[in-house]
Each structure stands twice: as structure tokens, then as C-alpha cells.
Image (tube, rainbow, N blue to C red; front, side):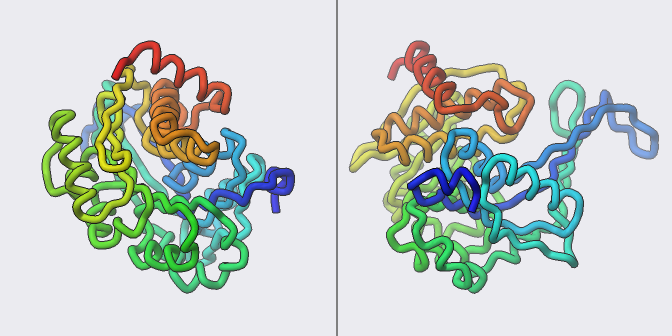
Amino acid sequence: MTQKQSESEEAPILVIGAITADISITAESFNQGKMNRGTSSYTLGGVGWNIARNLSALDLPVKLISAVGNDAFGMEALKEADKWGIDTSDVVIKDERSTPTILIATHADGSESLSVKSPNVLDSITRDSLESIRETIHLSKYCILDGSLEPEVLAGIRELLPEATILLDPASEEEADKLVEVFTLADIIKPNQSEAEIWADQKISSNEDAKRAVDSLMKKGAKQIVLPLEDGGAVYNDSNSIRRLKGIQVDPVNTTGAGDAFLSGLIYGLVKDCSLEKAVRMGMAASVMTLQTEEIIHPELSPEALFIQVEEILKEATD
């Protein structure tokens, strides 16, 4: 048990998702067969990692369940998690496999040229493996699931944690497609626009399209939908109505991690017993903060900073 958990009476928020090593390369041009000069950077990432780190920065107790290789990337992730007070006692370490890496090559103007992802070791997290640690997770009131997990894991966690609030982040269009049959098992789903298009089977080109998509997902059995919009706002269902909150648009420095920050802010609001509207605004605020930094995790994210950003959104945007 980490120090942060021992000092808190709250059960930890359970995050089940990927830890990856994200390698970015930027160059003026990419000419095949030639040496292309550019810059490179490396950071830990993955839906599970990003959300766990954000929640820790927001002073919430977190337990991260994931899988890594017994390599430098995996060991660094565990060391860094310990530094931030994240419980990784049930992270699976695979000797015969590598921690997943994501290579993203971009042009200097910001346009993406190529992205490559290595095989996902997250398939080591199964229904049976979660059953084996039931005693260490059964008290969690909130559980966040990464869409990279196999659909059976969502069904399994629903059985293991019948009273918990389960939130599902599809993680990508590819993952959203495989979760079509099981996303209704989650209490709250947070797709982005492209993922919502897959689940609702329609294009989203306007605010009205977004509302129709949420209505379609409700009719398919989704309990609660929170849909961040590309304009900085969000659409969500509240009881039997569908609401849109206007946000603020910023010139993004980096879009990676903004969706994970949104879900983290949303969770923070829910854990603190805020209204759903305020929780969604907290998600919007965390996302806006992340968009304005080159880091995947905003280095100054805190409860205080989050509340300040919420007030900024309220000042600049009216419903």
C-alpha cells in the first residue's frame, strides 16, 4: 500500500489500462532511403498511465492494473508510479514480452506522417487474472477501463465490482469497433467524436449531430454518455435530457493526452460529489490545460489549478 493510500480513508480509484513508451520524432521532411535530420523525445504514456498520473496529481488515491515487459521502459514506469504514490502492486511484469512502444513521426508543421504501435501486452490482463486479485480491488467505488482491454474484461469487471461506477474510454476507433457489443455494461462511456460515430453509426458534423449521437447511444442501452467535442465543449445526457456545454477553444500545443485528462477531471468531479454538469466542466478544464502544454500530463495540474480553469471556462463561454 502506498503512502497516499494509507493516509486516505477513500478506497483507491481503480484504473485498468495500458502503459506505453511513447517515442516522438519530428523532422522537416521524411525522404525514403535518406538520412532525415530531426529531433526526438520519449515519455511514458498509454490510457491507463495517463489517467492514473492525472488522478494522482489531483490528490486522489489510485491503483493501476496494467502489464509491462521486464525491460527499461517497464521498470521506469513502476519507479515513476511509486514516486507519484500510484499503487502498482498488481501490475503484471512479463519476462518474455516488451513494454508496448508507440512511435509517432511528425513533420515540423505538426502534421502526422507515420505512427507505429508494437504488440499490446495488455492481453495479459484477463477475467481470470482479475478474479485472482478480487480481494485487493473489491472496495473500489470507481473503475476506469481502457478500451484496449479485451471485451471479456469489461464483462468480468462488471461481475467483480457490481456496486462500482465503471467508466469506459474506447481509447481509439479500432478499439471502439470491437467494444460495440459490450459498451452498455459500463455506467459511463466517454468516446471522442470519431469513436461515438462508430457506436452511434452516424457522422458528427455539428452540435445537433452530437446530440443525435448521444440519443442513439441511449437507445442502444448506454446509461451515461459524456462526449467531448472538438470545439472544446461537450454533450452529455442528464436524466432524460441531452445537454451541451460550450467550452473554449485554444490553439493546441499538443493534443496527446487531452482525452485522458478530460476523463480524469470528470472522475475528480464525481468523486467529490459534484453535479454531473460541474464534473463535465472539470473534464473540459483538465483537457484545456493539457492542450496548452507539450507534456502529456500537465506539470502544474492540481485541484486548485483545475478549479481556476473551470472558472475561466465559465467566464469565456456561455451555454
